[in-house]
Amino acid sequence: MLLRIVLLFGISVVVQMQSSWLTTNTSWLKTNINGQAVILILGGLFLLYKSTHEIFEKVEAETTPKNEAPIKLSLSKAIIQITLLNIVFSFDSILTAVGMTNGVPNAMTIMVIAIVASVGIMMAFVKPVSAFIEKHPSLQILGLSFLILIGFMLITEGAYLSETVIFNKEVGTIPKGYLYFAISFSLGNEFLNMKLKGRKNN
Image 1 (spheres, rainbow, N blue to C red):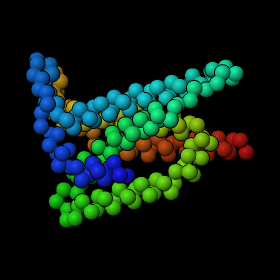
Image 2: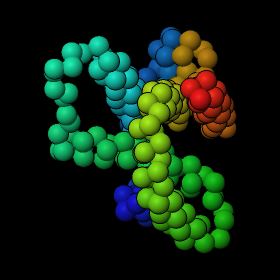
Image 3: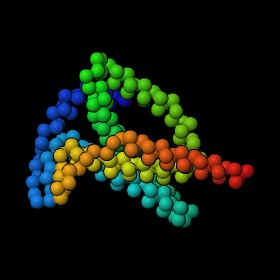
Image 4: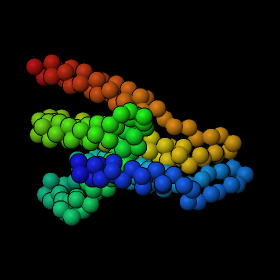
């Protein structure tokens, strides 16, 4: 929460990161990479790596001998990875929030209240949601698959902010509504499957 509020009040720095850092103009690639694009692309690549690695670990864990002790993530590595994920999502959400509240009176106050409220809601529901996910492991794979989808979206958004043109085709942004629809549809389908399995078990 504090990280997002700090990023929000440092929005002037974020806006200044729109200036071009690196320009490439070749026969098949044209791009003006800026600071915002670098953060989004690196964040997207990190999500792709982390998600595919976690899926691999979960799948391989099913085939490892039972007498082998599971590899536990150290506290320092866990904190670093959580912080990196938080920075990626915070940066993207702050950019979205600023775009949505552009020209709205008292926009800064509204965004701070929204950040505090969202974190409060997450803290209130973290235990029941965690227990539910632990009870249904398929949701873990589904959630990691969503992170892969979000990773691709962040990379595409970074390319869009860089005004990237590949083979004379401009890279466009992916509307977040498509992402929300895909997540909602997949979750709805998963819940139907869980209900069907429950009836069969009964």
